[in-house]
Length: 277
Length: 247
Image (tube, rainbow over all chains, first blue to last red; front, side, top):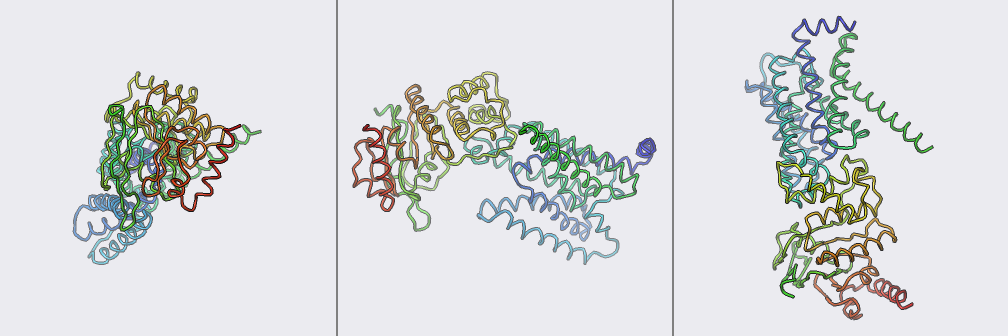
């Protein structure tokens, strides 16, 4: 079964693209998920993912590249949330709670005006492996490269921003730059992952690996590495199980990510209680 | 004396809407001086500290700081499982000197280790910061504040979350640092007994500066004007302190 799966991955372009894309989504979201979880901005990632629906719908309505429109919407959403929160002293969850349904509603309204072919909305929500093209793989590779450069150049700054934003600012860390850089990175991660994971499930990629990794990591570097390893493992296994059991890969990967979390939590609790005995 | 001055605050005034938070506060602090700021809740103590460390800008009056400032904030950020080591937290205090796009050098890491030793938490450098006890964590925050080798050290309620034993040894450490490094120390605290014990000068604040004098020269009238309704509590604390020290 495994040999046949590997053979098919090597033979069929769509399966190959899907496999590479799944791995690249895991590495990209694995890198950003650590900051999302440590800074407790999970809701922004979720909101940006949902906001992409509005961008995609308007892209279809205007005949523009809908991935570019989705990227723009996600970035504008994340920056707008941060701007309203910081400048107007509104709570972050209130602003997201307003902007998220607004973007979804505008998306539905825009879709109702689209004449002729409209893409499979369920595919947008839950991901569709058949939608992945070579261009998407290149987009993900580019996003990964951007993330690696950002984290390599500003690792210390990201660490201090995530640990204590107020004191990081006091010590001269360019907090605003790191904050908005992170938000843009999260938004672009979301957009480049939508075809694999879908608008709804991409949040799982942005949260679960880092939550699991946090249980084990002693440093931010190790947390990011563990997140990436967990994400890639879940993606490869998820692709295999979805192939064997004929199930959609996005949801299977998400279930495996959660199983990993439960397993790590259980082992940690078990070891903890033994240490206490 | 003028050249030893590390902080000069002149006519500092801050308002939110029509409410006065601070009004016409003036004082100075010199090297080797340990000043305690006391006052009731909402007196403007933390606002004063924020203005001095640069976290507040829309005030009137002037604040002149000579040299570097080390700052230990009120309720510093703390998460038990945040993956950051004790050494990395202390190194944060060196960021301004080191600057962006760089890594900390070997000598900077040596400075970090020396600071851990100075503050009595050597051997904990590799530990996750959040796993330290309340007293150890406060010393970690102090080590970070000392990283830039400041001439002025500012502490905002450093006793929060620390037990009595921890508080005493923390204040002894501050006293030692003041003498060894000849720095000026400005501390906001609700622990009035300890302030009287540790500080050379006391400032009573309640929107305005009601007194600024040596610890044994404060009059009940000055305290009454600063503390109003909290006066009874204050006097009891002070009496308790005096009784303990007259034995």
